[in-house]
Image 1 (cartoon, one colour):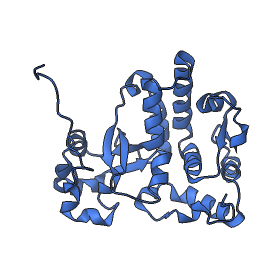
Image 2 (cartoon, one colour):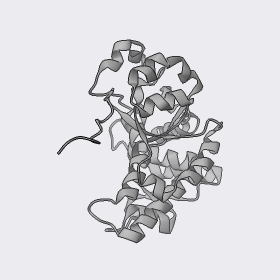
Image 3 (tube, rainbow, N blue to C red):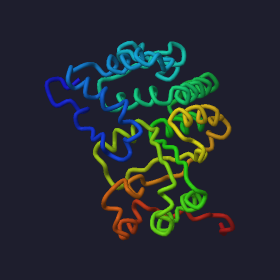
Length: 262
């Protein structure tokens, strides 16, 4: 994977707050990949064999035929073409942690391809599924936090209601977001979907999310943008109230055009 250089998996800080749900599975796999200079697909496949799941196999990227749609290939073959990079390593971890949700997401992608074909611009459903697959997260939180998040009332969300974050749980789903957070930057945003408060484990969230993904609902992108490094306890700098004054990151809600003159 490193091709004679430093293996990028060695740069992952598994102590980061956003990786805590992923650390028990991800850190040992990353350590083995680094120690043995193993291909990412082989390391991920070893975890599939050990756990008797998920319902896919991880294979080299070269197994994907030229011109074939990636999502359709996975749906038809139950094989995930995997490159030797961080992006695909994290994608594999999501398959391992959320097998039912990833399978449902892939099913919806295949349905959209069957209906519309593969076009230069994705349709609304495929676009929404891709956004969540790459940058999504699940948030279990008290209603006041959700009200403030949906209103993009950042000061209320992160300062006025800060103690309530102790009752919240944010779990990353998007593998591209996890890859980007290896080198954290303030503007990084998750597209957040509301999860019930009763979710006590990743397995609970996985089962629930697989049933919550409905084509009509998800085509409307039912997500809220959340600058993840604003989450209390996730980044030392956000302990300073001025952290949230950056309007380039903590953007106000879009101005409604309803009732405006033409």
